[in-house]
Amino acid sequence: MLSPTETTVINIGVLLILGMVFVASYLYLPDHVTKITRRATFYFSGMDGGAASTGNGGLVEVDTGLAGAPLAEGSLFKGEL
Image (cartoon, rainbow, N blue to C red; front, side, top):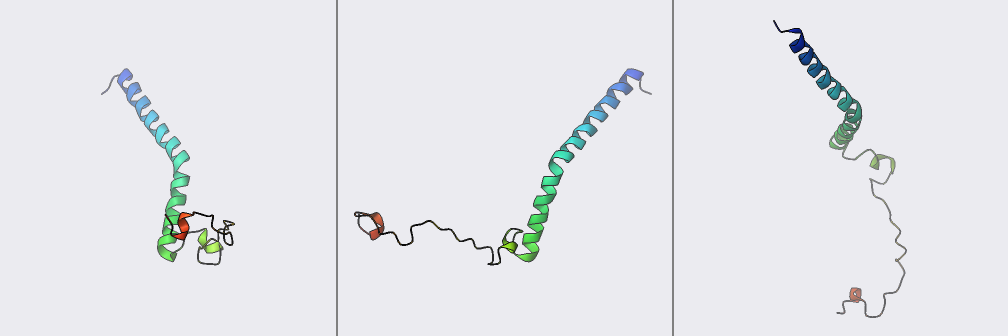
């Protein structure tokens, strides 16, 4: 048998470990479950959750505002060095 002091120390250690596991699961488990759900959705359907709502296969159009802009003189994009 253990002495009362040893029992108290062991009980405090067990409670601290269980408390840390509880706090860690409360803080990190919801995010982890969300990530696993998104990955499972991607693996089974081929698209992530956000791409399913765009309606164009996950492609996003980006307007840079440079579509009709002329190239500057001496530009490297014209093939000149």
